[in-house]
Length: 248
View 1 (cartoon, rainbow, N blue to C red):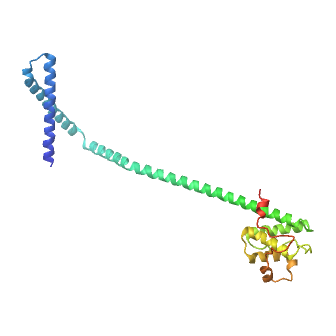
View 2 (cartoon, helix red, strand yellow; view 1 turned 90 degrees about the vertical axis):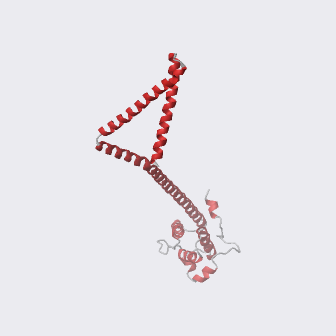
View 3 (cartoon, rainbow, N blue to C red; view 1 turned 180 degrees about the vertical axis):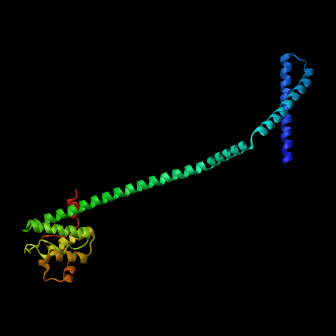
């Protein structure tokens, strides 16, 4: 296989030299006014000169290579090898770096969106709770309750809405008024619980603990059974849309 390649290489060189010699011979004869019959002679001379230059270049190259120290050739090979490796691995490294930066950017954007969503959710919850507390205050201001009692009811509502639990230990006792009935108080508790999707059991515990004097002689099951009353007219009616009235 190598022998065939060498033969092909030699043939290409020879053909190139012949063509170049013929072109040079034609131009020389044309420029110097030499007869066309002498073109083959000029072509042979040109071919011989090219052959001599060719062999001279080969000999010079061998001499130069032999004169170079082996250590220098080894260092050059190592340098070329490192450069090739650098070129080979550089695209991969750049790709990995770009991918890493994209992941970092994606992670940052995701965290920022989550934080904004959390802030938005907390703001909405605060607006909702403030609306519930305004509804509570407006509801009980219509009755002859003291300001401290209204404050205690608001605190019980705040704890109930925020923790889904009942604030049993209160500092201020709410006295019973005949103007407020059990049905109205149960409707009030149901209105609050409906906005937060709180169950009947916890709502029953809330109304019985917050307005203890009204339910002193009532059982848990009785209150739970009739927690929501829509028939008749009462001081506090069932209202599922209290948020739309207090959130602008």
